[in-house]
Image (cartoon, rainbow, N blue to C red; front, side, top):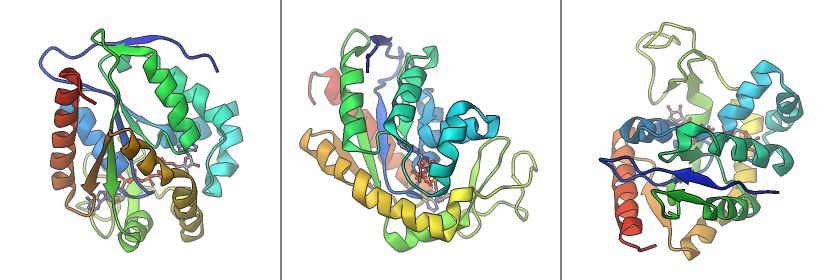
Length: 244
Ligand code: AP5
């Protein structure tokens, strides 16, 4: 697939790099991506959210992805890669971006490496910071079965761990919270297996490249965020100084 050259700018008062969030379903990638986006003023690019939006709008992509996602399997690369290339080429990515849910296979990671080799941040090619958010199996199950979200402002809650102030309505806008179709127990099992089989090898892939930062995702969300910001700053400073 053709890879377009894209030029990214570093914000004047901060260091920005592409950020990749790795982690099992329910590890807290979406929760942390929103905090990083607010902290650095760069967009969250969630491949799962883009696919779900396409399903809601009933686009051709949404029609093709719907049944695959409802089974908890990965959507084929011929649908996902052009979608990511298109999103990364948009202007709001010019100061960096956070990838949440991409890459998910070694093949997607190799494609992304090639894509980013053709991009530059402030005139330099800057490799992404890869943050792996680690959470144990039982905690993942509780997070996934308890997750609810607001369809209007996308705020994420958990009925067990981070409940809304009043029963099942959004704290911000009062809309009834919804549960994702793939958060049913039988689909969760397939998603966790697919993570083990297809996505976990990425941890080793990025460790070998010396880019991996591992975070204990079982801490409170604010602590996970603080550690994630520190990892981003450290990697960005090292990249700006010509390191890995
Ligand atoms: P996607 O939408 O990416 O889902 P996922 O990877 O399964 O991850 P989740 O969104 O379930 O979890 P998360 O890590 O974001 O956790 P969250 O912050 O919400 O993908 C869905 C599907 O799309 C895939 O199955 C596949 O079919 C398709 N797809 C997507 N990308 C693809 C790709 N690249 N290639 C092919 N197919 C693709 O948190 C979870 C819960 O925990 C919440 O309730 C939250 O409130 C709570 N929580 C979070 N952090 C904490 C904390 N520190 N303490 C306590 N509770 C917490």
